[in-house]
Image 1 (tube, rainbow, N blue to C red):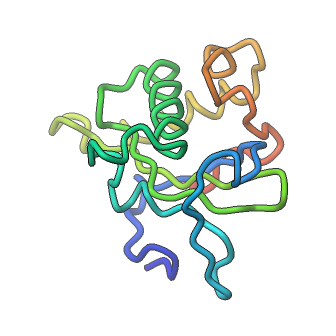
Image 2 (cartoon, rainbow, N blue to C red):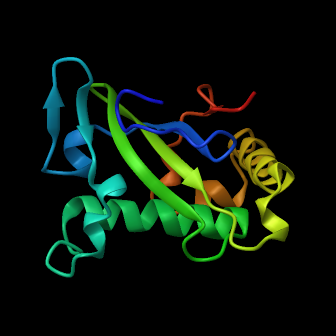
Amino acid sequence: TDPLFGLVALQWDYSLKLMYSISIIGDSIDIDSDRGRYLNQGSSQSCLDPDRSDSKYCTFERHIVNDMEQSLGLQSGQFVVLFIKEADRHSVIVSFRLLPMTTDELSIGWTQSKVAILIEQISDDRSSLYSGNVMFKIDSTWGVSGVS
């Protein structure tokens, strides 16, 4: 388990670093002395609430999801933002889950292939990943965590 959000789904949960200040992403920043500053709206799925869907955070989350779906060839709902944690004053760590949608995709191979594509795209600044709305600010030196 992970102390910040509980259960970690091995081979499905990953994170990457984006060069954005957390205050640009959302207004409802939770602060915990043990965990730091983070935005937890992803795991609580608060953007599904019509009253919150136009918030700064939900707009940012929508952009990340759209960028990742397009660059990795994912269906709607296969990329889920779990939470966004402040790494430093000018960057955040985005924790996310890749969700298989069919029984064929339930194999570890499907998820690993999508992560391999992501890693390849991160190292190529001409890839479709960098043409998105927010993913162009990915920290290519940080890579993708959760990859063994």
